[in-house]
Image (cartoon, rainbow, N blue to C red; front, side):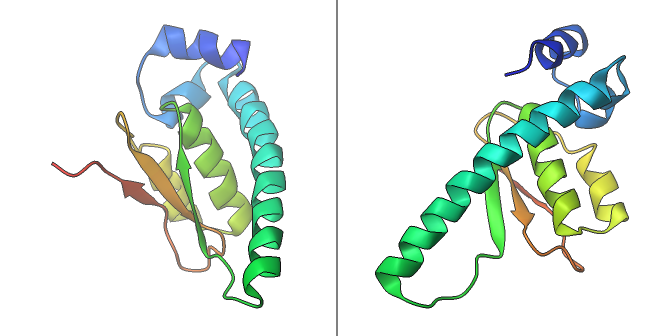
Length: 124
């Protein structure tokens, strides 16, 4: 976790990522948080992919990753992954206003050409 992100979140409350990034120091704080989380996620993802490939032989590459976690924090991670994957600017802009509720997540394409992130909502 990031103290600065927690501070901004405490001030702004449950709000879309756009509002948190616009707060004083928000873009830097949530950017650094997402960068650290991406490093950890990448290491874990590569390790699991290598294990699966060794066990099952050649298989299709993964094309999406599901991101779950504390609201707004998971948005910053999903946004960073989508940016790195090459998701188009318009679809990235939509992600800034995505309001993810409790027990929901974001499905992010790993190869963003023409794809969008998908809000994974709880069934009613």
